[in-house]
Each structure stands twice: as C-alpha cells, then as structure tokens.
Length: 111
Image (cartoon, rainbow, N blue to C red; front, side, top):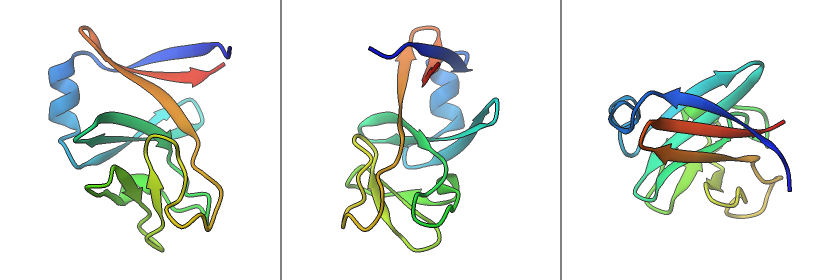
C-alpha cells in the first residue's frame, strides 16, 4: 500500500463548503503540484489539474451532473472517481485521496 502525506486544505467543513460551493472547482497548490478540487453532489474530489489531452487547467473548467470534470479547451469529460475520459480518447486523470473530517478538508498525496 502506498504511503500518503496528508495536507490540510481548509480548517473546517464549513470553510470547505463556503470556499468551494457545490458544482464548482478550485485550484490548490501543494509544493509544485497543481490539484483540482471539485465539489459535486457526490462530495469532494481531487484530481491532477492538468488535462492529459493537451495540458489545460481543469480547475478552469466545470463539472456536470454525471460527476465529471469538463476540460475548458476541448470539453473532454473525466470521471471524478476513477479518472477515465468519457470516450476514452486520452489517458485517465491522476486521482488523489480527499477526506472531509471534523477538523477540515484533507488532501492525501503519494509520498
């Protein structure tokens, strides 16, 4: 099993809900890594911010009712749970662990 480093993104659940309303995306930087956090009807999700197709910032895209993040450049749709593109035209997204806890929103990145 891979070891994770956990990073506190927001200090409380209420701050997480306020800063990333449902249906919205936000870029988070951890060191040199750019992570896109999405808030959907299914909760919070974390994926790499870079679209594997041509490198667009997914945090500038949007989500849909299918629990997907849509790239702002070519509208490729990526499932936020397993990372696959809806038509399998490109590599899947890198998915990251994210947990909403009593003391905040935490992002788990592989060491």
